[in-house]
Structure formats: structure tokens, C-alpha cells
Amino acid sequence: MAASIADIALIGLAVMGQNLILNMNDHGFVVCAYNRTVSKVQDFLNNEAKGTKVIGAQSLEDMVSKLKKPRRIILLVKAGQAVDDFIAKLVPLLEPGDIIIDGGNSEYRDTNRRCSELKSKNLLFVGSGVSGGEEGARYGPSLMPGGHKEAWPHIKDIFQNIAAKVGTGEPCCDWVGDEGAGHFVKMVHNGIEYGDMQLICEAYHLMKDILHMDHDEMAKAFEDWNKTELDSFLIEITANILKFRDTDGKHLLPKIRDTAGQKGTGKWTAISALEYGTPVTLIGEAVFARCLSSLKEERVEASKHLKGPKEAAFSGDKKKFLEDIRKALYASKIISYAQGFMLLRQAAKEFGWSLNYGGIALMWRGGCIIRSVFLGKIKEAFERNPDLENLLLDDFFKKAVQDCQESWRRVISTGIQFGIPMPCFGTALSFFDGYRHDMLPANMLQAQRDYFGAHTYELLSKPGVYIHTNWTGHGGTVSSSSYNA
Ligand SMILES: *[C@@H]1O[C@H](CO)[C@@H](O)[C@H](O)[C@H]1NC(C)=O
Ligand SMILES: *[C@@H]1O[C@H](CO)[C@@H](O)[C@H](O)[C@H]1NC(C)=O
Ligand SMILES: CC(=O)N[C@H]1CO[C@H](CO)[C@@H](O)[C@@H]1O
Image (cartoon, rainbow, N blue to C red; front, side):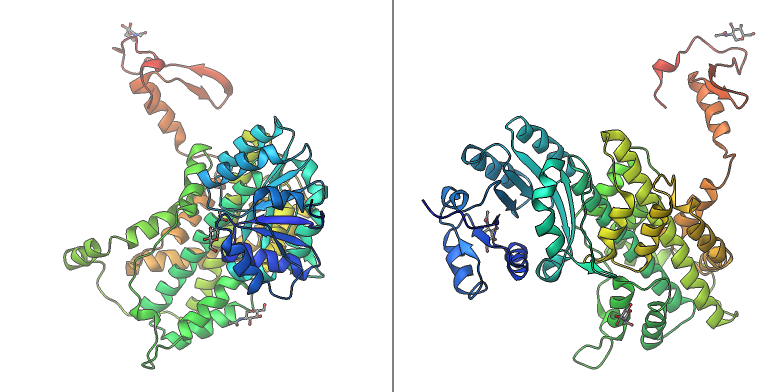
């Protein structure tokens, strides 16, 4: 029998898997590599892993025999059936207390299910969000592990060592919560990424079509913004993209076809938002903005028929308006994160998870696409008050939104006058205005529902007591159960 020398095994030697292995190796862990196509293992040992302490396995049995106990096995295989197939093959080879970690892009509901299936077999299961792409995997990803908490003490050291670090070396990895919480948080991360990207696109659109800034001026603006509260990876790459010139010396960006692709993770966040009744409007709009962009031919045709407002030159102070756009972006971004955390809170309620919100902000602070200085502020807000109901009620963010408010409204009203689409700027402001109103027009809605469907309503003075009014004097005996409006 082979000596049990490996600290952890990893199955799935695509680039992400290889890079995570090399990252763990760099941090002094002995990793056993395995791939279903076993020749891949030898290739990896002979090439990328040459000169490292990485060992290979010829079979799952071989892999299991080489692991220290409790055994720790990371799966980095295609989400879906492949994960279940590997789990089914591993289960008979493992002992109670051994740990299977799914580091793929699994749907959180699958992770919930796998947690309960493996619990009944006395095995520990962890579903971990991994963000940061290939580069992150190699040099420090953001890691979001959740599942059976008993596994955490056994994997914490490895996970926190290989994760991205921020500030004075704080790892962008902490225990997220029970069951599929890690994968849920990863999904929300991706949704927020959609929102952040769309907000930047809207700012770019306003700069381009209202202020008529050229690419270098816009690049300079984003570089300047990168030194403000907006300091972040996405703002930084936006500046670089704007500056980038093609081989012919011209800017590349205006040559790129304006149809956005998507892999669906933003969509899943929006679907969850609808499912759990949480108004995560900005991510929803960001997903729809991509959908609208993809109707390129239809838009080209429509552009010949549907005219916007008469072209007018911007007559205001350009420098001041540019700063207004920056503030509109910042305020909208605060709304987006407030909504994202509302969804996390609702999911926690739904599934009985206890989530560490400040920890989540820290996990996103570095290593991943949405990494930013801003997330440090969110972490501080949850540190000040772990039970914070909504980010917008934290003093720092309350003041930030207040400071941006006039600019935000000016940008949106100007943008509307110029006919510029700003789905995310707009929905953010609508959400803000809705959230801060103690009285919304939903009294009318309730009256309408009661009028046509006898759905009943409550009086402000008597919440909890449901009444029906005979609105017309000729109302039949409709009961609310016969309608579902
Ligand atoms: C953005 O700011 C970061 C520091 O916070 C810096 O490392 C990076 O070079 C800046 N990028 C640009 C394009 O200005
Ligand atoms: C509604 O009011 C009218 C007129 O007063 C009455 O004839 C009718 O029975 C009422 N309908 C119900 C469902 O109470
Ligand atoms: C299941 C599994 O381990 N598959 C991987 C083996 O390696 C190839 C290429 O390196 C990957 O594409 C597979 O996903």
C-alpha cells in the first residue's frame, strides 16, 4: 500500500484545477492530482508540475490510499452530472469523516441536496465558490466555502493559505454557512458583477454621447475615478480597455460588436430574486440589458424608424457633469450591493442559514472580478453592526448616497432628455426612492385586487385584519381563492 503522504487530492486537471494544485503546492501542501483521463495526470507531472511536490494517482483507489486522514478531496469538474458521478464513485472508497469539496460552479440547490445525501453516509461535504479565474486560482482566488461546518477546521488552513490576501494579509476566504450557502454567495457575486459592469457601460455611454469625450479622455476619467471610492478592478480594466489601440493604431473598443454574451450566472441571481421576492432590480436590469443588446439586427432596423429626442448640444459644465456621472455610478453601485445583501439575507431566512455578511464582503474584497476598496467599507459596516438590516441604513453609506443624490438625479434626468438608455442607473434611483417612501401607491393596488377579485386588504389602522368591501353594490360572491392576480 502506498504511503499516505498527500494533504489533499484534486480531481479535474483543466486549467483551473492545475492552477489550484500549483497554488497549494506553493504554500507547502502535498497535493495528489487525478483526472479521469489518466494520461493527463502524467502530462501534468511531466510539465506544469515538474519539480514540485505534487504526486499523481492512477485510479481513485490509488488516490484515496495516498491521502492523510481525514481525507480531503477537491472536485473541479463540470457542474452537474459529473459531480454526482464522481461522488458516487468516491463514496465506497471513503470512511466516515472524510471530506469531499466541490469547487466547481454548481447550482446551490444541488449542493443542498449533496450535503444531505452525504450526511446520511457520514461523509462531510463542502460546496465552495471559487472566483478569480485562472489567474486567481494560481495566485490567490476568492474562496467561498459552505456546507458541513465540521469540515471547516480540516480545510481552513489550506483554503486561507491559498486565497487572495488584502490589507494586512487578511485572507479572502472564510466559512460562509450551511449547505449550498457557498455556492449561493458565489452566484450572487456573479450577479453583482453583471451589475457593476453594466453601470460602467452606462457611464461610458453618457460620457461618449452627451459629453462627446474621446477615448483617451474617457480613459483618463476612469483612471481618475480609480483613485476615488470607485477604486476597483473593473474600473481599472475599463481605463485600460478605453486606451487600447488595435494593430492599425486606432482604438479597438469602437470596433467591437455591441452584443453581450452571458453564461447564465447573472440570470440565476435574478431568478432567485424573483423566487424569494427580493427586489434585486439592478442585477435584473443588467441581465435584461445584455438581452436587449443581443437583439442587434432588430435594433439596427428599429433605429431607422424610431427617433429619439432632437439632437442638442450639451450646454452645461462638462467637468461638473463628469463628476455627476461618477457620483451617479457610485450611488447606483451602493444600491446594487444593498440589494445583493438583501437577497443573501432572504436566502438565509429561507434556508435557515446563518451567514457572516462582513466575512462575505471580505471574501469579495480581493481575488475576484468585483474586488474593490468599496467592499472593505461594506465589511466595516457589518462589523459596526452585524445585524444591519440594510446597507443603506449604515451611517457611512447613508451619507455617501446623500452626498451623491443631486448628481445622481441630474445625470438621470439629463440622460433621459438626451435619450440615453440607463436601465441600471434608473432602476437604482427608483429603488432608492421606493425604499425611502413610508407610503407607496400599493394601497391602490390592494383596492384594485379587492375590487375585482375580493382578495381583501388591511387598513393602515388595523394591520393583520383582512377586510373585503362591496365596492360596486352589485358584487357577486367571488371569493379570493377563485383568482390569483
Ligand atoms: C487603479 O488603482 C490601483 C490601486 O488601488 C492601482 O494598482 C492600479 O494601477 C490603478 N489602475 C489604473 C488604470 O489607474
Ligand atoms: C353588495 O351590495 C349590494 C347592494 O347593497 C347587495 O345587493 C349585494 O348583496 C352585496 N354583495 C355582497 C356579496 O355582499
Ligand atoms: C473529470 C476530469 O478529470 N476531467 C478533466 C481531465 O483533463 C481534461 C484536460 O486537461 C479536462 O478538460 C477534463 O475536464
